[in-house]
Image 1 (cartoon, helix red, strand yellow):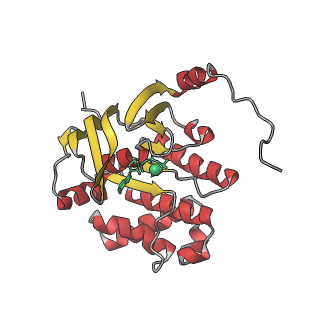
Image 2: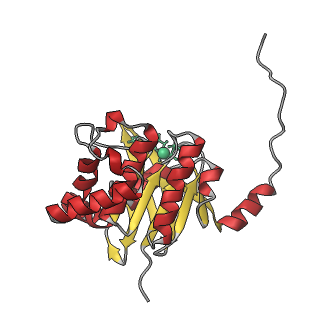
Image 3: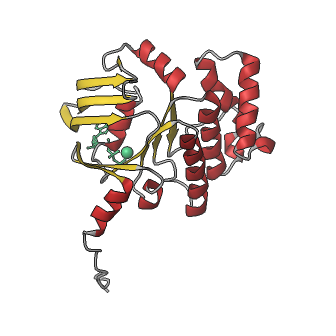
Length: 250
Ligand SMILES: Nc1ncnc2c1ncn2[C@@H]1O[C@H](COP(=O)(O)OP(=O)(O)OP(=O)(O)O)[C@@H](O)[C@H]1O
Ligand SMILES: [Mg+2]
């Protein structure tokens, strides 16, 4: 049997802030199989982005083990990590992270440059991906000429064209209105149905509802890890907050 795509063991991450050490992850053990769609939820500061950065090899753990598709990757040098990222991991962030001096199609092509895909193949795949997400007509526009939703679709086309096995998304709909956010989630869902593994950080239960599994974090630890349907049941056991009258001083 193939090893799990993600196998993180007792991951710890301390951020250094001047002289202070901020413990962001205090021992996270998490296994994700290829093809899963997992949402990571939890309060601000609970360590969600820190975990996603480790899973995406953007950062190194302070302690703990990480196997990606069976390969031990926690202690690889930056060049090796960059190579694995380029070939197998796609990122979608809240702030779109497009290069402002490159057109939509150039942004999509760039990710494939690092993966070593030849030029004509890059152009073909970029055009196909942009057309697929409905931006075929806007491919030569600069990011500044596109709406937030369109920029996020370019970021998705970038992932789609490069075709990574693993897609990591940190609040991908956080800067978008509800309807545009839904369009973005539908695109992510299509990618998952096509076999890609997705790990998504969100505060929004409507966004998490696209996932099959919900991992909840608190204070740098996983406090619950349940299939989405059961997680929803568990949450409904907690009484809804009662709306209180406004208490602002007049
Ligand atoms: N680069 C950094 N330097 C210092 N401290 C950091 C750094 N990045 C994160 N932290 C701290 O680590 C803890 C976890 O942060 P993290 O960004 O992982 O939380 P989060 O769950 O993603 O929060 P949010 O929902 O607000 O995005 C916080 O206390 C944060 O202040
Ligand atoms: Mg975060």
